[in-house]
Every structure is written in C-alpha cells, then in structure tokens.
Image (cartoon, rainbow, N blue to C red; front, top):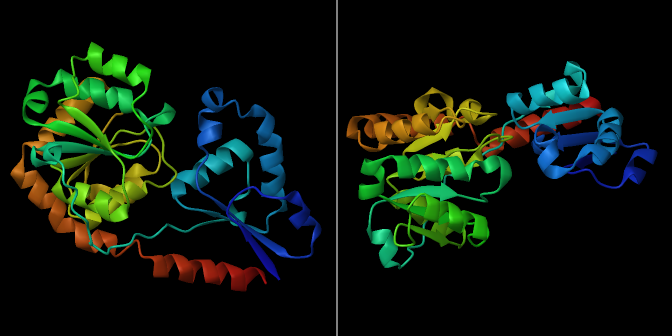
Length: 275
C-alpha cells in the first residue's frame, strides 16, 4: 500500500501503484556541489521528488533548501524532527590522554565539516592551547593534509588524539568533555547537539544550516567562517562556569521536544493521510 524511501533507491518502485513517502535528510551534495561533483545526479534525484506523494524533511532548514534548489511545492513537504536516545549509559575509555581537560569534536572531518577552522581557532588562543587538549571521536585516521595543518598551527600529537568506539564510549567522551564543539558549515539536522545535551555536555556550535533549529536558544553559536570569532566564543563558554550551568539547566526540557515517539506519531499521521 505504501513505500517509504529513506534514500534514492530503485526507480522501478514508482511503476507500482503504491503511495510513496520520501525522507530527505539533507542537501549536502547540492549545497557543496563542486566538492561532490553532483551535477549529473541532480536530474535523477528530481525524478524521485516529483514521484513522491509526500516528502518528509528532518528540519525546516532542510525544507527551505529543498524548495530553493528543486522548487518543490510547500504542501508536499512535512517537517518531522529526529529524536534522540536519552539513555545516559556510558562505557569508560581507559586512556591517560582523557585524564587531562579536553574539547570534543565528533564525526568525520572532511569538506563541509569545517574541522580546519576549528583547529585554527584553537591554535589562536593561548588560553585554550595551554589548558585543553582536543579529542576527535570517529572519522578516518588523520590525513597527511591534517597533519600538515597541525604542524603549521604548532599543534603536536601530545595535544590532539583521535578515538574510535561505540555509542557508549562516545557518551563517555561527551560526559567528560569540557565542551563539545560543532563547527560544521551545514547539517541537515545536527543530532550530535542532542547527543551532547543527553550527556550534560556544554555545547558551542556553528550557526549554519539546521544547527540553531536543533540547538535552540539554549546553546552558544559562532560564525563558522570567522576563525577569530570561533576562538573567542569557545573561550567565552569554556571559561565561564556560570554559562555552563545555565546551559545545562535547559537541557532536560529541550530534549523532551526531540523524542522518537513524536517522530513516529507524526510519521504515522502522514501514512494515514495519504493512504
């Protein structure tokens, strides 16, 4: 009766007489087309959008991008936020590096993730450099280009380390970080902000894409293109116990707005509406 696609899969589906729901998680390839060489795929994607009976975007920011890039009519799109697992279970990671105060970075570091500007901002601040290390969780091994960046910024490997692990180990990283920094130039949703909140981790984030929509007015933001501002805003949060306490006090209520039950209930209503 109904097919719900969460990716751009076999077009043969559209030859059936089923109703089609399509979830759009982001438009990263369109927004950064030169980096991803996406031009030849855009027409195929447009075909999916035209054949869908209903489109779910995971943020209002994602919806806005979809309308601007593909000119999809507004009444065809519903915004349904993702949820977050608020289970605060964690698994300790035994490493002496984590015994020193650190700033946390999570996920891949390429292209739009803006990791380079974060590193440059960190190296600009004598206070940050002196008092905090950097922990990178996930992503690939540091590349040759990244190692050259560290060298140019006079950051040796006694100050920065990459870890990999499971969700419970990531929770441990959030739990023990002085702050989580999200410098991304674009996110379709920004789930890591909610993950950090669930572990009571202070947050400083880029003001790009959907991040302010997910983080709300309870966390601190910076212009991701302004290296000096990134440095200043990280300092402003990380050295202010009052600001950290203020942030944390708002986390529990904010997380209630992002439950998987709400996501499921709203999705079910779309199914009922079109079938």
